[in-house]
Length: 267
Image (cartoon, rainbow, N blue to C red; front, side):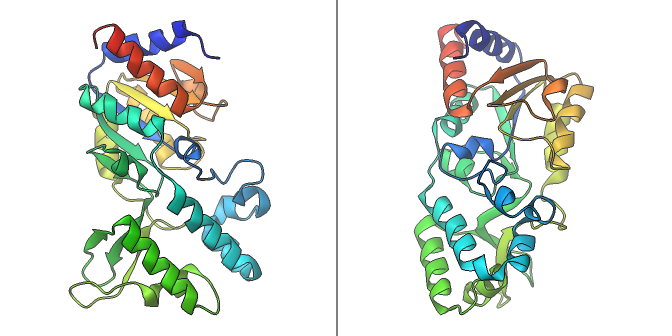
């Protein structure tokens, strides 16, 4: 178990730095039941081409497993709810420390938890984007999964492409797509994420492997502008060597303890 001394050290660092940004990866949502894909038994472990081509590459190479793969992905997201780590980030925002969350996750859990400034570099699976006018709309959880379930029923072959005909049209009449970033597509909100990175004086690195770019480049950018880096992860990542403090643990355990420590020292 992580000592209270380490928790208090992290809290003291945050206490002195009023411009905190969180960079989050799949690990923060793991305790909400969403696979990190890179874990043993995860999708990239079972289908190695996914680590370089994403879920689209897996589906293209394993059409016989597409129904099982996609229903598994959507079922885990459907069951997921914000965990204590997500809620602790909301607490840090309410306390006046956290400016923004930069996430690589598409699961909408930071928004559901209540963070007000969230940059989703890989998009949001609950959001539709019009292919004609570019308008974006986040669907309500129930509406979204009813739509997905109805589309799956009509498919002979389950694939992300075959979901498109079942998506509601935009108000302009254009077709829509799920607004997540597939491998090979440009990330979203990169300029905004970089601006937040360069303005912060402390970055929390939470549950990311640090191998997916351009998100993995943000900690070095923050550090080059004088920011302190604190990483919370169950195991060391590609970013650990850059960090001023590494805390070996899960975010849904460590972050609430840091919040409690901040409250205890008058934060």
